[in-house]
Length: 275
Ligand SMILES: C[S@@+](CC[C@H](N)C(=O)[O-])C[C@H]1O[C@@H](n2cnc3c(N)ncnc32)[C@H](O)[C@@H]1O
Image 1 (cartoon, rainbow, N blue to C red):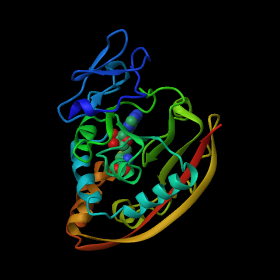
Image 2: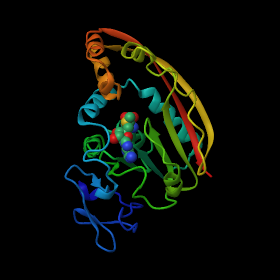
Image 3: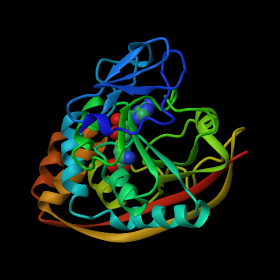
């Protein structure tokens, strides 16, 4: 039910005042009004903060991501982040998942931490709309990571799963002692796929860049596991990544006819605290 939405700590993206539920909408004291959609999410991305008509991942990428993640192929990543949260924020009461996509990880965090207020935020409306079907216990919002409609000093944990970190804005919503858990691809992440797609594979950064003024790194671990994919899984993986926008037709055809491929999954789990 749309009106079950937990809006504590959600603020109006236009005036910054706290929102409250009124009927099927969220309202601020000066009556800026945001409808709770039939699916249960709220669009808190004003047009001024939108830099294109349909920002973020495309519906095709999102559908492929859902099919891939539903197979549990990235479950170890979810477990590693859950473990980091338990270790570094054992008393967590509020978690915001930035760039939540179609909601796989956010919903898992909701199940792992049933007493916490869990918010999933993504700039892509299609993503948030899809995410609603994963869990009714999560507050799903359309929002940009650079202007979060979330109250100052309210959040214990921000997760950024293959997403983006906006240091200053994250520090604003984190309470003192709050943490960011970020997952980024390692140099060898899906390297076998890249070797098929690109003629030259340039080595990228080995480690995520250190945070600047607002966060301090407290842990960073590299994780690796092999993943053997069948044809359907491989096609979904290709479609859910930006590689799908760059791959040449002949390489796409090659991948689409590959029956099995073993890939390296490699990622950093980095924990940063508010300075
Ligand atoms: C690589 S996907 C990762 C999705 C999800 N975290 C996962 O791992 O399945 C990155 C996500 O970030 C979202 N995104 C991109 N720019 C954003 C922004 N400025 N604010 C919020 N989300 C953004 C995209 O729409 C996309 O869903």
